[in-house]
Image (cartoon, rainbow, N blue to C red; front, side, top):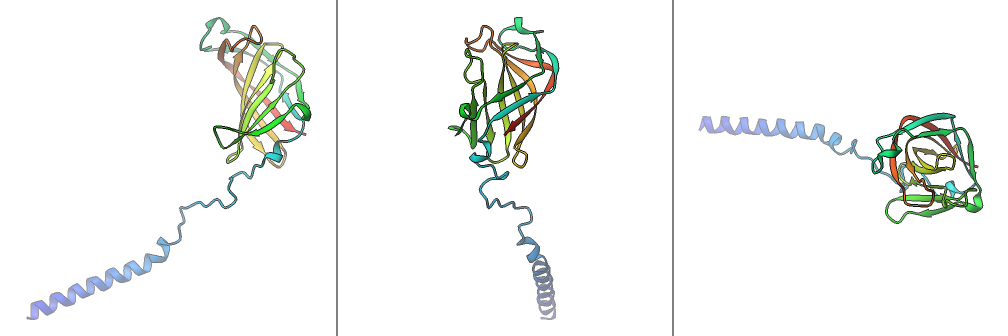
Length: 190
């Protein structure tokens, strides 16, 4: 009988210790410290109106060459040179919701009558990540640029690391090539 009583007391103590231990750490378990709640619906706060205006693309002067051209190796070694600023007037820039992702599509036309659009890309609504193609009339290529849209300054500091070659102009893209050095560009909504 004494052993049974001793076992019951030990069992009771273990239960009491476990209960105390559990109650001590209960508040820490209910804080949801690892949960991120997004109450605004978007992370970077992007709205369509942020993208309206005259778009300007400014390049840091650079000359690079293409390599690793995927469908037509004859474009390997092609020189791409940039040094100008391109402006797309508000009347030619269209901002729409994307059909396939949570993004806004931006398209704009410039002065080259053979190419429409000369500016095309998207800005993700959740992260403001931006991917754009900009027509380079001199080299007959679309420069592909990636950056983050800053809502306060309404700019994208981008790096262009590849190009879609379109020579002859207006035909399907002949090759997509990597660039042997990056081209820096700033996209501004004025």
